[in-house]
Amino acid sequence: TPAPEGMTDLRGSVQDISEENPATTGKVGINDPCHMVFTSGTTGGMPKAAIVMHKTLVENAHAFQMTMDLQRSDTIYISLPFFHNTALVAGWPPAVLAGAAVAIRRKFSASHFWNDTRKFRATRFCYVGELCRYLMNQPEKPDDAANPVEGMFGNGLRPEIWKAFKKRFYI
Image: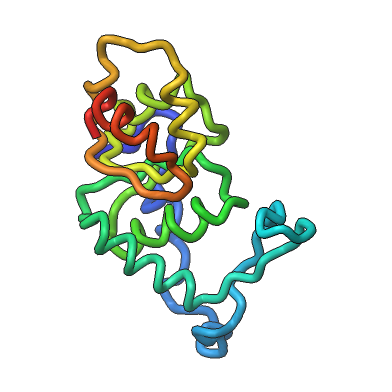
């Protein structure tokens, strides 16, 4: 189907780009650094950059693709920033592996979240725990459960929120 209004269909954007891998591709190994993310130091240390290896990206792609049973027909909604590891390591790699779509929001919005899932026909989303609390803190609406989301994945969701979240949003 055509990309929603305001979105870019990457297939058309890359039509004239060579399909050949760059010459440097063969020099990159699974244990080489892939990217760095800034961590807030939640492990007790000072804030720092954390190096993520290609191996981590590949392992997470497989783990989340299998766990969520992602298919080509799925769309993962990512409302987290891509400098956050959850979006960068758990969000788009399993979608790429499955051949699924990714819908990206420039900035998280609790008030627009569920309308976005409907707009993008998102079947999954990735989260960090407090994101779910922000969604629960929104005023209840009659269409809360009327969304296309079938599953979600992430970390840090507090147990006392899960059952109410699942019931309210029918996840």
